Image 1 (spheres, one colour):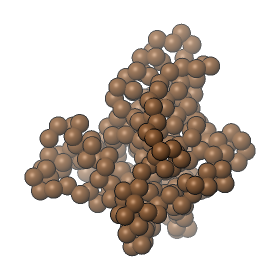
Image 2 (image 1 turned 90 degrees about the vertical axis):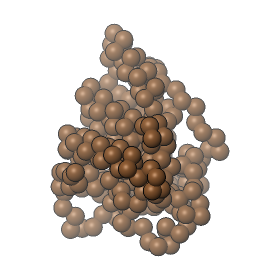
Image 3 (image 1 turned 45 degrees about the horizontal axis):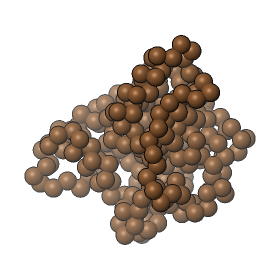
Length: 249
């Protein structure tokens, strides 16, 4: 099994989010077009996170005489390795990140947390639904050996990445433990929440710092009511203890 196929397995086998589409969170019936570029001195990344799009924006940045300081992104995510690569690049270049509309899956896992300063608009949607360290992968027996090799590599990369940016790697999977049996059942049938988010105060418990509200508020459910039921707000336990490298190979 090659990495491309494994990437597809990773992208579509997150049972906790069920069959509902992340397109619904973006309140669009169509997949967003992919676009990367530089506009008004800022980097733009719109669409799925892929190696091709990553390489394009890396090249644009390298060729720019005046290096942009901020990445504006809207993305429903992508394959784990591509997300980690983009997040590491954001970290290495000390970039700020502003969420235009939606930052879900590998965007929320790796890109937003890696930013020097993290900007949220009043209607910016953040959505987590698991990561390499989740336990509920559905992989058939014939592909298990190849999958285990791949996911072990991704878990090591993910652990190292989060340690580098000072984030507790429970961030991406904590919400799964708070889903009820009803949540799982609804997700399986394409109803209910497709993922979860946290309050700013609770994000800080995982190490997400330097969050700036562009519009002096962050209440996206008020501005995107059609998407509100698709993202479950998770309350982090009061006795939560921050820990780097919580998950290790």
